[in-house]
Length: 454
Image 1 (cartoon, one colour):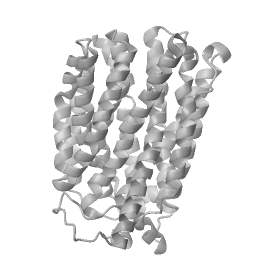
Image 2 (cartoon, rainbow, N blue to C red):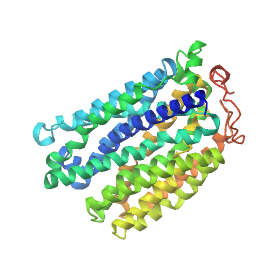
Image 3 (tube, rainbow, N blue to C red):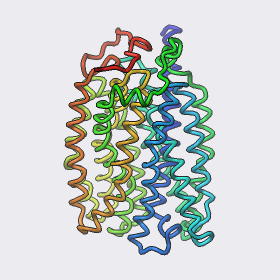
Image 4 (tube, one colour):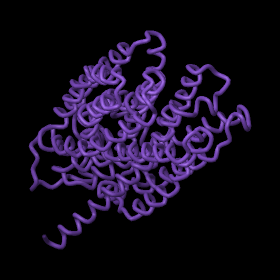
């Protein structure tokens, strides 16, 4: 291996570590809140409500973070397209880490009354703003540093941060539950939030050591940044934004149904022990973590479109499989259902997305395009999934409406994937040509800097 090849490999390893570590931390913070919302936030912050109303109120605060994401995508998207991917990601990480630690020291309703849920909602809103820029920025750092024939594989690393964060948050909750025992609802739930300070320091150290992407560096050298990236995006590529949001939708619903609602459903409706549900989610996350780069590699080998469509097809019936297994009341069956949904269905839906979406937006509005598409879809459709599922079950006392809802969005996702794959591409697209290891990527100014695809 030549010196140049060694440097390139070292650089990609550093970029990959930064993408995984930073995204894992931010999703650790986000999922930690979701798990706490399912297990303890109802009685601690909304004790005057009935159990059902308290659960709904707790999940409503969970949804607040998603509703803040579009604002964060506009804020950080514009920043990322004007001052750079690296600086933007450092700032978003700082915002998320601070908000999470503060949640760990919040007073409860019993201590300060309605001021407690107000503070909780405010910090959740800050988390949502930070997440609005994290996923898109981390995805671009990986894709824009990658060679063309490895964008799917390297891009999937940002998706690996999702189960990584879920895995870390589940471990933290499980260990805290074991340590505190009956006092988990009193003080044990605070431990995982406070531990995020350590993870934040590690992630920040790694992220600060990463260089800016070649694409943005070339854009900056040419002084071709847009003064108002979001406005330019919506003027020239609004169709891509809408279709990309449709591509993301089924994965958003599926993931939060599994990672958040299923925990509440298993413990409160089926009386499966909290430990069994957390262990099932923990084990499934490990399998899911391994399956993501496999799906990413398949999208390089075959097609982003084909892999995503396979995910949409399996999601049509995936919800029925999940709840049929969970309804047996067995922790092992719950593990099998969650593993199928994450490692098979969600992996196919999510792993190709960073490369697939980046290939559709021109470099001068790419951060804004990827971030806004993801934030709108996950906020409006995915983030409300636990709330909507709880509401659907209260209406029907069955999960059939929840599963049908997921199936309908899977059809919408398939249609959006086909339509988006036919839109003009800003960079070499694996769906339009075979992987070619000898072909150099077209960077910077050669990637339609004006953002016009009309």
